[in-house]
Length: 350
Image 1 (tube, rainbow, N blue to C red):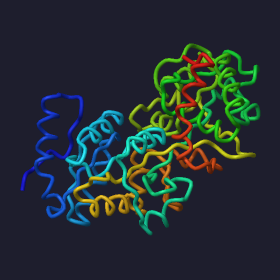
Image 2: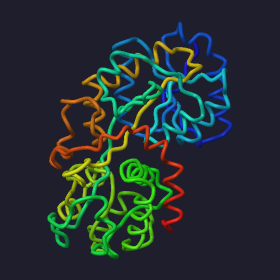
Image 3: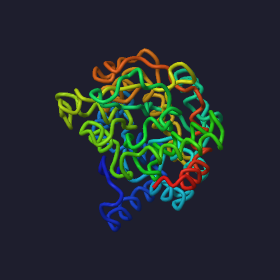
């Protein structure tokens, strides 16, 4: 049996990538019998290795991992066609799952375990993909400059009272695109565009950097508010990778729209490739990933929210409190993505 490196990164070297994928392609016919699955993933978290090892220990099925940018992975699977060695694709953000869906690379899955474990709003209506984790995109505020009583909804962020006070990423960021897509789903196109124009007017500076940079801007006083995913903020907690008590103690989390539809959540998720050489193994792997032990690893290792109820949260995330989440089906976030991008462009969101 041919042996392959467990972890391989697309982009590190084109020649090496071609050779590795070529080897996998040549070995394709044996995979259903060999007890191995080929996972293409854009989740770049070393802690996910524990999930792969635990699955192998429980089932005897080895996980061969090919990592890369989501769009590159989707394009690769599509170009490989019927000869693709990929059994499943896992990526982050509903818009990227939608891109994979539009590329026609997923095959519908009917699984009582997946359907019984994952809430309906967190999976594709036709079973093309399933959410594995949730990410809440919230308001983070400088508690020396803002009182929580001043905050309420995403819509309120477009109010003139926040002029020059908000730090937020660029319109190229898929997390912001999905936030706007959720506003389209809930409020309609016209209201979503008006909101985007308000956000542009209220920016404390032109968009730059990632979520971490927005949090730093709010903590430094450059802005009063930041819009970011909770797990980025959790990294500033004592003992964490970006530990900075000065930032962590100066910033508080606010969950918007608690009196209405709830806070916007995005997801990471995965689907089985329609040409999967080991379809049964791929489905078993997805089913394992929504088991309580696997969900606990997701929650504890990267401070994400589990999709399965009653799974213990990361202690730092738990400190932020419980919240009501927007129940719009996340598939709509992907479907609305092209319109969201056009709206943000019309609004002048850089």
